[in-house]
Length: 119
Image (cartoon, rainbow, N blue to C red; front, side, top):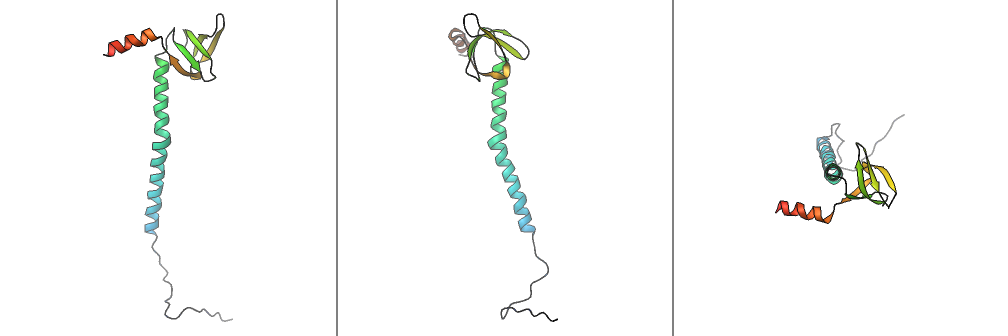
């Protein structure tokens, strides 16, 4: 059985070697760029937020008003290793984890004193 191949006039036979080094380098470059974008858009901001949160928790003290991630507002009455006891109403006390604190509000007088010290 004979197989007949036809080609356009003037076409040359394909060579057996092709160069793929250009596409290899561009693929590596794209991977590096993707990782850099991922790092600067996701990892770095998350690290900054975590650092700010740790600083906020380390400066927490009795008398501070906190808001939990669930929206509960209370005044800190006791601080333990991993938990904080807050007073939310006249007689209601809740013990929450430190990770559940969304924000901390200090007394206005204390904030003014800190600002005066910085000036």
